[in-house]
Amino acid sequence: MAIDRWGREITVPNTSKPVALLPLPAQTPPASHPPDECDCDEHWIHLLICYHECLSDPVPALGGDCDQSAMCSPGAIRERYELVFKRGRLPSIDTDCSVPDLISRTRINYPALAQYVSSPCPDCPDDPCIALANVHLPDPGKTLQSDSIDIAVRPIVYTNDLLHDLLICLTSKPATQEHARGGKP
Image 1 (cartoon, rainbow, N blue to C red):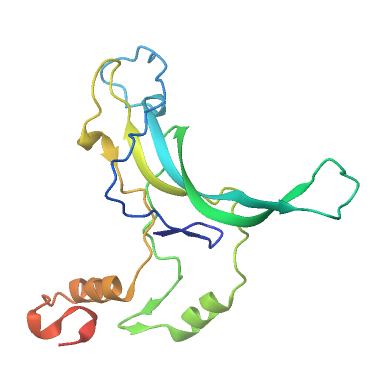
Image 2: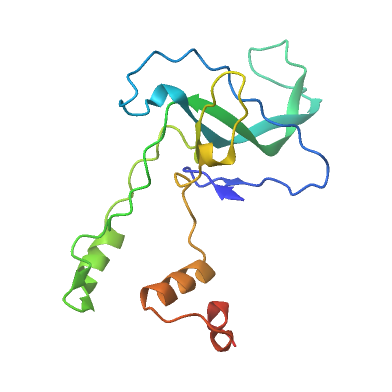
């Protein structure tokens, strides 16, 4: 399950049926680079998951506008997803604190937190798709290896259980059976 950058829910069903493999896009021959030069973005692609609506269940349309050729209109919308490859490598996730001056000495700066949550929301991005991975393309004729797939660009929705685990880690207290996930014994 994912939530795209416009807030729409994307659900990928867990199915026991075999799934067709997604072919990698054809790689253009790499330009020759000196061996000590960095790994260029042209050897990378990134995989995105995107919300996709499919119009379905056509029903007769008895009235209409100026378009007299349309005798049917979709009666339902099926919410699906689409996997998309794009060229290049996505940047790493920014893990810097986005609330300026949140911690003041050993206390939370409540006015700074109140100012942050009260500020206007940013504009919606043009592309709502969610990054799943950066993929380093193998040489032609070679097989893609799992260590060529970087999922660290994938954004995370922090659940209560995950936030609890992070707080345990940050306070250096190991989680035990007495303090099960979610704080319930």
